[in-house]
Image 1 (tube, rainbow, N blue to C red):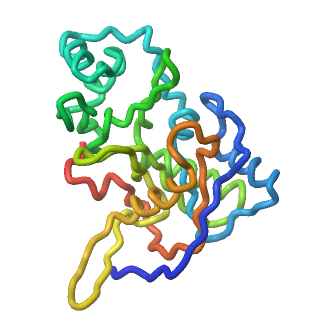
Image 2 (tube, helix red, strand yellow):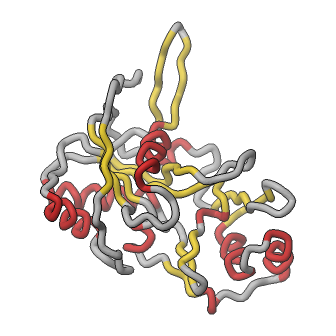
Length: 241
């Protein structure tokens, strides 16, 4: 289906956002922040959440309990990345390669994503955050809870930081989605193109979410035209688990 055009949209971060505790009701916290700021969700809004989803689902790993194997030790020596984190990358992935002689490690996660460090985020010197077990299911659960709390028909995109093997720096991509079709088809001049639409949404939110040191793990995009779908990000992966 050809996309409905979007000529303009707005985006805003939910802040101040409290420090999220593992196992917290993320939808409830989001609703509380909205109430404090006097903002209400509207039909068609897209809520983009980043590492907050992993925190709410308590995907924390204590590095003290991780025993690096020989391959992790060798990769750690080459890349300078802690051996325990490298072991988590190996455990989470089917394959990997180094973008340059000293890294970063580009890994194909067992969920089907190709991600820098298998999408694993450091949590200080002692821990790390893993991806959600099923990011699309996480997006659906958060979407359903937000609808129940707010009464607004919203969509949700779960975003994750990522890097490209051909350049320095990090960007933001989608790893889960609910209520919004992951692919958008555009046509112009007789040419048809599929676009990874939820990645575009995640990247737009990433401008205000930032990467490290930002206290706003959730953003709302308003005014985007999209087709409603629960197909999820997994449906557009080349290599699905």
